[in-house]
Image (cartoon, rainbow, N blue to C red):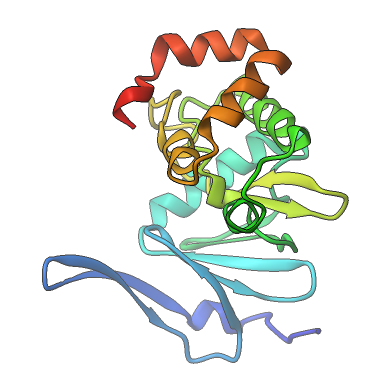
Length: 203
């Protein structure tokens, strides 16, 4: 699929509003670009076979995510960035299932994925990330079963190195104990660090 997107995406607008006490994302898309994802920060549209654009509610978030992705580019575990605009970032379109959906179906977590999750978290910390929010829904299983991580707009700006969401998601899927057992064998240092800084009983 090849799309003529050179200017189309600039006509897309997203905003966040509150309806009946619940925050919702409102998307104004007068183009033919396909919506492939949405979250609290904005919405993502496919531009071509290998590129997508994320349109943000807050322009500052576009700048922050662009900087975070550029800082982590040498890890090869985040999308490549091609352009950062006033309210958008053009980046790699990562083909594949997200890890959360995979784990729901598999009902187990392969050791190879646990190894990669640990590696990605350590690599993000190495390049200066102060918020390591690696939700399992934000890992994409790409070709060759290589995990890549998306959604890093606050990676360099918030101090949250032990964000518990990934661990909570694994617990909800009944896989936290398996993950931690594997992690203890793979990387005892990371395992001990989590035990000291995360209250697993309160997840």
